[in-house]
Image: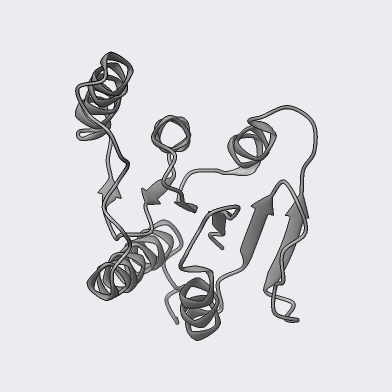
Length: 160
């Protein structure tokens, strides 16, 4: 069974993840640098990591596998998860793919350079209700794709 890994420190859609995961009975690993409130449910596990700055990212990459789902706004983490065969989306519902991640990484670097030069100030657009809706649709689509892949890999036995 696939697992949903949540880069949780700044994730605004944790409640939505819990709701969808319960519907599909998908286990969730909530990974953060400090303890967060996670519903009491055997499907959900809080993982607290300590140490260096990217400790949560490193834990996710170490444990994620092909067919799992990562929820993160961290572009380098998204790339690392894709390299392990996982499906990845951000809190605004943007699905990252092997085909798109190169452009996303390049754009991230360009924007960082422009901010450093003082040509751009500010950060990303604020999170809006329509982002939540796009996220729910994206998560549902990735779960459906994961379930379809699992069925294809393990077809039911034929009765004789």
